[in-house]
Image: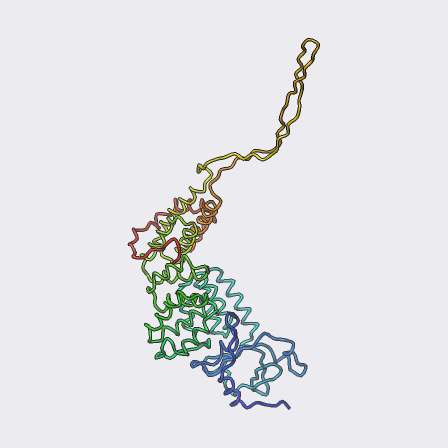
Length: 443
């Protein structure tokens, strides 16, 4: 006979929690889908291994399933039913679930086939893909749902449907949940920051939902503002992302500087996204002014930032900049030309001029020079400047694609042609002035 584990002990052991996965790991393990206030029992299991194929196991019964349990939680992994009682496999041991706790049983392979079919139908439609993520959560495919939301939010960080799905199903993910009365420097708030560090976008969004529930708003905002100037890259990354959610419209000057001058690309993007969440197109004015900077680095990064800020009012100014960059890099643009000769010269006696006098003959040698080499014609504009013009065109095209949702082509000519045809609907009113500006050099 198999040794049985008391169902009561089993439930207590599971609700005690498990070890957290390492920061930065994208796979959601037991700690992420473990017990929480919203669920009485929650299990996950790794993919099947050789240990899951014991000879004494009834293979017709033991297979990977998703068991839906009372309280809305799920058990996903290798399971079987023995004498009417469901058992869950951990390593080489079978652990029984309490009688009556299972409310619905689904075959994992069937669910995954349905998941792939839904993804095929949704294609690139972000709204349909968001609905698919919600379906995955409801069916117990937690990892798949989180990965789907990551893809959607990476492409469209403010997608309302994806954020709604995350808010509706966030209780299925186990993470630190600070009390509403916690202070910004409390251990439970610090634990939430530690958990969020290195996570994917959707999981960080879930962390900021918890952080927004802390009533010490001034303390939380002050901590995030201080982290904007932290030398630690991960702290700056968390700060710019959290500020856009917890305190939109604050620290605009710091976010403007980071959106252009931070050495980390992901932080520049997050800072620009946080600026857009202020909901005020005036934040774009300093970035638009930066497009006229003498520093090519600043021009390129300001153009990239404008694409992530997300206000459609800046489509027309960006098109104006793209026209200028295209004209500056076109073949018809006149630049100084020079000629460079590379070669060698060889002197030799070609002939003699003979003069005859009385009883004397004088031979005067004729010396000639043979030239070997090549002549290069060069239009010198400056290597660095040409590189930045090309980068500006690419950055402007990418920014316009993000802002308009259009994709007429990958080069400036395609966008200029699109603007001639459809640009009227994107004409923008004058942007209001803003008090801050982006300097050419980081402070």
